[in-house]
Amino acid sequence: MERRLVLAAELIGGRFMIAQNGEIQPMEAPAEFTDCLARQRAACFKDPVPSAESRRADLGALHRMLSENETEIISAIDADFGVRSAIETRLLELFPVREGLRSAISHVEKWMRPQKRTVDWLVFPGASNRVIPQPLGVVGVIVPWNFPIQLSFGPLIDILAAGNRAMVKMSENSVHLSRLLVEISARYLPTDKLTFFECGGRGPAFSSLPFDHLVFTGSSATGRAVMASAATNLCPVTLELGGKAPAVVAPDFPIKTAAERIMWAKCLNAGQVCVNVDYLFLPEDKTDEFVANARRLVAARYPDLNGSDYTSIINQRAYDRLTAMLQDAGEKGAKVVNLAPDQKPDIASRKLPPHIILDVNEDMTIMQEEIFGPLLPIKSYRYPEEVIEYVNSHDRPLSFYPFTNDKRLADMYITRIISGSVGVNEAIVQVGQHDLPFGGVGASGMGHYHGYEGFITFSKLRPVFQQGPMSSIQLALQPPYGRRAKRTLDWMFRLRG
Image (cartoon, rainbow, N blue to C red; front, side):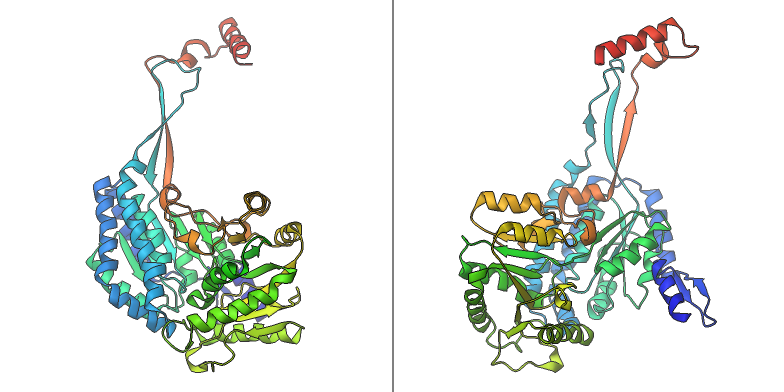
């Protein structure tokens, strides 16, 4: 009975809790959340449409927050992971966010301009149509741990560019960074415009708040709960959920180059990237060559896995999950290849060597769940149709990576396989392009942010029709309907078909 109650509470989306007597009771959001939401909403009413100058100032404040506290941010993220390369934090988080801020600062005034729209032919001259992008209000952001700066400040760029206010809940695995951002953010922007919160296990309570929009990045299972919770408030959501992103190397593409690029992605952040290559299709006769190149690359790039260049798995639970995947695959007939066999893993620091898994099948956990680690299953294929049929028979991925110099083949893959984004001949890099929208499709998410599309996501495109001095409706189409109305309609149908 107790288990059924817990499941029921989960299905409702986390807005309820199990009391000691076994009853399901509504979960009340902490006063810290509700008070902040009330302050930010009141501030919205006082300044409902901030000027372009004000928005540029807010974006500039975000840029200063990152640049003036870069060393502390890098150290905090490193402490949260156990080991996280400072180079990767700067390359994958701080640099792209600062580029996105610069772009938004230069474009926000143009994005804000009302858009003229065509006036229907029936309306007399003098009428006009326009669409005005207006702020939504208060936006909630739920941030994962794997790229905590990129996935908090990335949405914030678009949220503030669109003239909104934001409440940001960090991950329970980002304790050091959360505390730092809570401490420093008020120096740069008032709390009625931007507030960071530590998690403290309060995710369900946060997602139950009546935001004007909610952004969540994380697992599909949690995303479903967040969406269900938001639905009770009719709160629109942007969900970035990941999934199993495939890559395929075509026969025409050099295996050495493919291995260099794919293994770079697979080892980045120890594979803990939502858009990473989750599994790889190789031509039947290319597997051994790929594995040999992968071994060489890991030895050259990570001569000491226990050094600072190779990131730790975020926590023991995640580490145990990945090692269980490897064990499960081996027990079910896969060939498990450790790409750093001569290096002893440091269990205490949760350093998991990169592995390739061959001869995989659908019964293995590694082919059923998003991996989120430095493990790469490989499937062989003969014809492109095999790849297309396999990918399309599963949930739509967040990203897809065809490696080929044959434009027609690349276009065929892009056309016939639907995914959130595509990277041709490179993995992950498409997410760092601030002028490309980022978002999933189907089970991998919904909605977009980044650049102009992000500005639109967090704006209400408000249609405005303005009548001219005369109105055709008033002149000819008012009841009681007589000959004039009939003749007018007959003329309209003859003229316009």
